[in-house]
Length: 140
Image 1 (tube, rainbow, N blue to C red):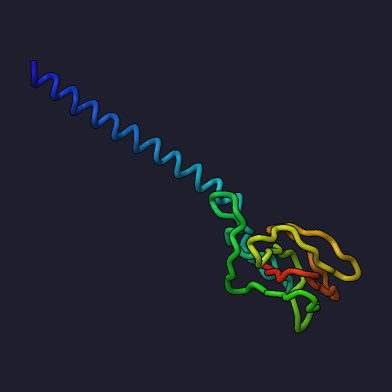
Image 2: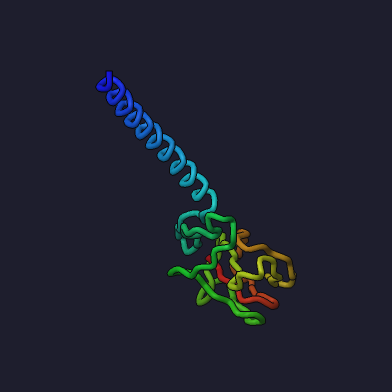
């Protein structure tokens, strides 16, 4: 009788271990899928036009993730950068705040100042000038 009880307990422990493993795998898959939605698209350069690289811009808690990776461009406030030869490549960029306390900021592109948010995508055309008004920004 004791042997049957011990055998049942062992089978129960094995079943719980397998169930826990399955639940853990499902949770990891959900976390990976959620992280994928917070990433910037992979970089592609075609005919001199740049398309953005992959990098997480929001951490797992939903906070802005301020990182600098190879290929990023840092622009200080009131510094104009030209889009085109010798400057920033035209194309789609993700604009990031370099200050974790500032998630909304103003940028002048061409003649117009507009409010942008950390992680927002912008398209820069050949001949544009970009200039953050008060916050250092990162173009990714």
